Image 1 (spheres, rainbow, N blue to C red):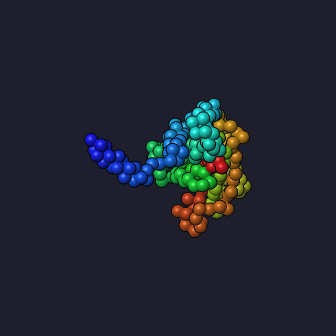
Image 2 (spheres, rainbow, N blue to C red):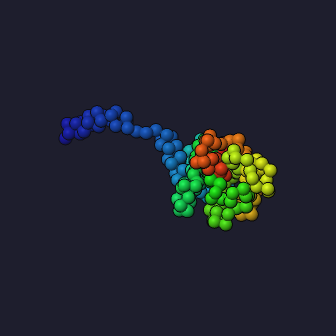
Image 3 (tube, helix red, strand yellow):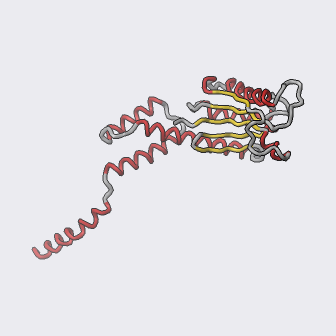
Length: 227
């Protein structure tokens, strides 16, 4: 009997050093789990300040005060921005606007690009009725985000023939302001909004063909990434 137990003890002693190689330090595991569940929670898109503070306090208590609040806030902000971009992609697909609109996301933020003909008539700055439902959907997405929103107006290099505006610069600025004014009417805080007209001076392509000019006539809605 003693020999039997001795054999078991020897087996345990032999295997224990090997199994310890697979043990993940508790602190590392908790950190990974915290980030994982935090990102999942952030994708619910609505995290109030009070609720966020409770999450931080709970995690600090569980992890001995080692939670970096600023890092957590940054994770949630980036998750929200990514979620907003996905909603914009879905909106463009739903409205069948892929030929006239595009969404780009990079370290600077989210950029929604609309070619001018889908928003404005030639030489005009009044929003087309058919674009209103699209701008409504955009406004719903960005309304509760804390990010600053910049609306840019761009034209091609052809001299303007409309009697309403004296230059492409004026036309592009008026178009950008029309979008900003509409967002304000939808309840977006005016302090977060800005409008700027670049005229023909920031083209996407050289103004050497009609196709390139068509791409250069555009409105860009920039959701500025929070640092």
